[in-house]
Image (cartoon, rainbow, N blue to C red; front, side, top):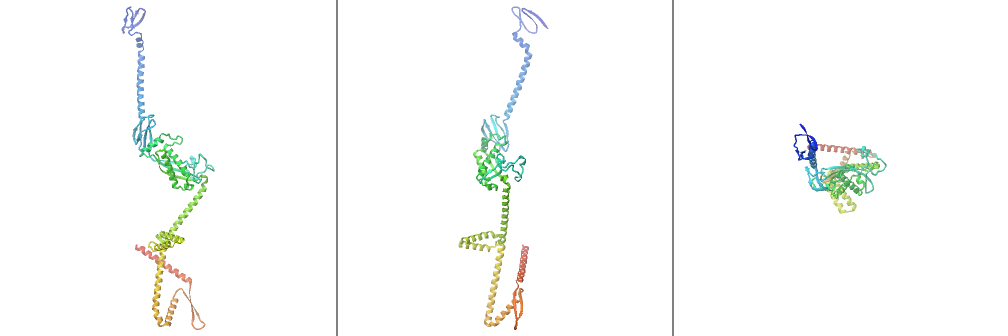
Length: 457
């Protein structure tokens, strides 16, 4: 319930629900003065504002805590089994090389975790290749059409050889940053790990360094190598390029190791492809003919002397050189060596057959000589006793032997007086046919002998 009190100087309505004093002059005043009255009148709005500020501060505090936790959590990272990590603090390497596992570092910009791939990687280097459009990338060299009558700088790459030639090459390179060598990993991070990838070509620092090193080494080595050696893909050329490229990487202290380098393409410019193709075809024909000739030579010599043909050829070559140099001592030694080799059991083929035939003929000649000597010794006493009778008897035996031969042609002609003439001649054709029949019979006997030996084994 509200009442109205009158005071001197002012009047206002107020309730009796609050205390008030009357001053000595009979007036009444509010406790705390006018300021308290204003606060009390604005209390609901201030309270709402204060509550809103409290809530805002609490939410902001939570957000700050969450952001701080997220910021600290950004320093947590995982290193895979085929990776190594190095922490750089304010741009300098800090600590040791980290291996596989869950790791922590202070977030950027305090620390930076540099991840290094330590598995073997491969890159194809086309710096010295002829230009191929993206649509023709998979075409074979023989199907690529040159874009102009000469090489175009900026498009076609080529190596200049020691003899002034031009060759296109394409490399396949396998390289690695060895994970078991902490110093190599640190060298890579120190020298190359801080470089950003090439935005234009999207290359990692290690890949870019390998390409630059191989390109540099290729130019240097090609300047000392003939075109023909590169065209034949001489292994020495590839090895020299690898050695030079690795030296450049080592001088840079990159920590990169080149495992292998293969020259997968080594061709002349497209503009002279047909001319080089004709040369290549001629060389292939020559190589094929040489291979056939070598095979025929081996077959012929093996047929001539059997398994012992190689030492026999060497001995014969030594003998011919001795005769050329007029070295009698060396000639005699080589001749004796040839004689020894021919008589060895390892010598076969035609040489063995000739030697066996010679031995057989020698035995037959000796046997005939001995038979004639024995007959001479038998006839000598008879001749000394009765020469005329012995001669007549031998003549009759000789005539009978001659007339009994198949190849002997006998012609009888009457004499003008008493008796008859006998002409004895040999038909060469008949003799040839008899020898052929004899040789055929000999071959048949040998073949039968071989079959009998095979059956025994």
